[in-house]
Image (cartoon, rainbow, N blue to C red; front, side):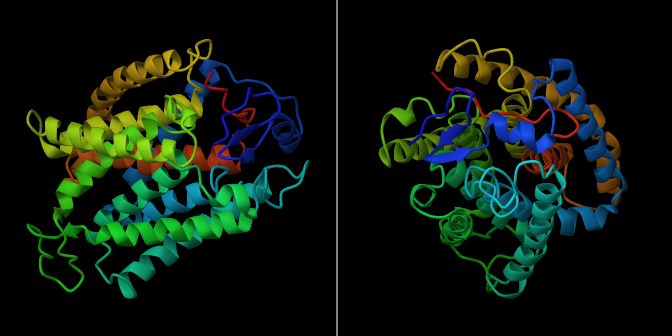
Length: 383
């Protein structure tokens, strides 16, 4: 497995070169610069405001019963088309059809159109072809499996082995198919007991109850991201083990820690506070701290010191985030309750964090090259 480079001439992750400084400089036609912490803070606040407005003003029933279950396919396709799997194919740098000097609109609008198409086609397939379940609420249980497998394939397995041996198109299409097949296999582990859909034709009747499995997967994502190739610990120490043993060990540890956190937390807190408020906020802070703030202020350290500092900072930020969203999300929760939908403030908060802010910032960062701020460069080397 390739180890992230030093940030000077691009980076290799899992044998795949991602965008480098020359590319981002030419893409924006200006001088490459590093945004200040104040600029990045304002950047996050802008997307927080946009996300809050979308959640508040989009009709509540349509938002929670159609857009949000479908948005798991947005998360899936966003990652499939990103540098970690496809190299940005078909439109975005560094391996798509984008050329130096073409600016932000081709990769931005082109890839966004593909993401929207996936968000329409995916739910149509699962509701009408396989497994033929109602989009709401069953789409959430399918969607969390899809989201987890997507992050696992990109963050833990680095798109291996396709990313080392095939074209960007095959990496993208093949990787997307691998994720969907693994999702369909894991779907068979669920059962819908305790829900209105128990015993339905689409009930897999597997060993794990769907709502329990949902919380378990959210906690597993916490650890997938903690040991991911581009966040918190930057896959330390697993990149030292070689392929595929490092990925196998990373996978097993993430599952074990996810199970332990989920089962242990249920002894002292409610399920939604555990997976949505606590785990969801940690996932959000891992994303924001790594993808927006670039591990600030710990770049001076090597792994694992950098990762340890990152992780405890992200835990502290998650605590603040939970308290902040208790205030910010209250008007949205009032609308949700008035609509008679089964979402409390914990679930509303995690949807705001991951399905709006994280989703929009990643699309903007990957495909619109973070305009008008200078675009983000390659991640630094872990060591």
